[in-house]
Image (cartoon, rainbow over all chains, first blue to last red; front, side, top):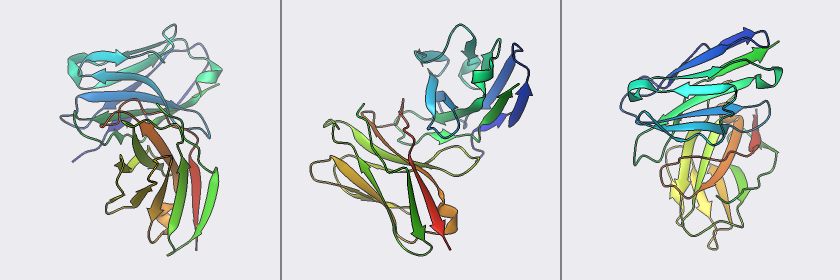
Length: 113
Length: 111
């Protein structure tokens, strides 16, 4: 069974440019999460989806970040415009209702220069 | 959700048991203790979780004190591949939504 797939693995962009990350969760998983991980710190939740509905986006900086999960499967996370402080690893995870375990992808490492 | 406190780093000799402590003195009665680990350049990986009783699976054992204010993750025979950051998380959800990750413990397994 394929795990959570994220792309790209690495992305370098100039500040003020837009960037998008893509996540394909494990088949059948209705819950999808986006996390942000700064160097040396634990992941921080940005947004959680139950199917196509964003049920918790309280930590998402909505002035520049947006996310969508059309059809309740794949998801994209966008930053526009990117700032130097957005350099981090962006992790996607998924789980199924009633399951105790969240499965994480390998993440996308974003560098803003 | 209650906060956790973990030592920032630990060393363990290969083949020996690794005992990783976690303090969660403000844990509530309906909050679970979860452990995840993150190997370099990978996403976090679930290890084990528990509520009150000690738990064991193929990866590790979880020992929770009777007052539930602390717990210990035990890797019975640590290998070099167990070198990772280990996160202890307390969450009231039984299926792990909205975890709050702290900085964790960086475990180095030494040959």
